[in-house]
Image 1 (cartoon, rainbow, N blue to C red):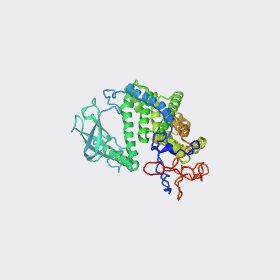
Image 2 (cartoon, rainbow, N blue to C red):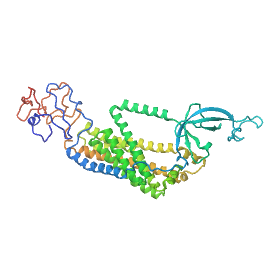
Image 3 (cartoon, rainbow, N blue to C red):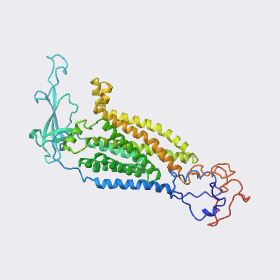
Image 4 (cartoon, helix red, strand yellow):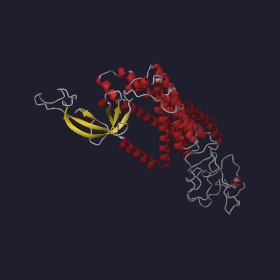
Length: 496
């Protein structure tokens, strides 16, 4: 029993099963005489409960936030992407599926195809042979022109060659001459992508079981919010930053609570993620304006801006930074919160300072690897660009300060600052919550039932030890510490 509990409090616990401060049913003590070790792990939940008062405080913060996110979804809901007539430029072309019906070898000169330059051909000029090209006959398999065929010439130096029966994707240009209206733009890789997705889902379910299934459901919801809300809302002219904050918050709430449960521990991770996203938004806005980044650095962005001039491209850049950082932030905040809860469970008597220091040692290892992962991910995505700068023999300063690279640098460093800040912030929130539990001083978990006054301090249920109530020594009345039978089916109740 705790230090402020009266010695004879058995009558207080005898009426029925007790409930913990978080509403969970407390595990009853094992009967006396069975003290060979069953009391150390079976009642150990995934997280120590917090007091009802703290749960009310957390709910007072998160419920209005969730209501605001829901209201934002309703107000900004676009109702679908705005319709427009395709221009036939770049990606703004209608596409159909097709298949390769026939492939034959022809002389490049006969089909007026561009041939390799003399420097690319090996051997003396009088021994060079005619260059062979491939003529592929493509048949459209979907759309209003199903069954229509056209030819595609593949030169020897092309990176993609065709085989009979291979699926391809073709673009349609209605304003072009009839023979040139269709052109091959890509191969059809639907089947291997679905197989890869199925293998991924199977691996997640086999290893994660129910938690893995919930993670997949959360992934589907996240993809739905992205495609049904964020993208159409931006195209409709809504502020990209506001849309990203509302959509990202919705994704965060669904993913975290669905995967990790509606608990105080998850709520702390949500608060840590929210605070870190706010910091990323402020820093991103500051440095995007200070560095005078426009966000219009590639053909795709220029095409979007040309088709929808009302879209604020700079806001789109900031929205991308927030959404890109969200996934890694979830991982960091959940990990740190779980670490604090487990450390407190392992050592219920640990002070806040000790708990914070131990959790921060875990967080430092985690953040070092996460920041490195972010930098390498962005560097890998921009590898062709970095190669072009290397070929041009530009200085490091010139490369780093050019807009196309500076945009990625700002994206990487702002996201990394948010990740670094999320570790101490989330750890502090978790320590304050788990340590402020009204019953935090009451040991729980393995070996947690300790003796009161004059005892040996061994956990209840030690090997070969008889349980004689809450204390090992004599009671204040000089008794043996055993209590009389308290009624109820002839079982002896121990004093708590």
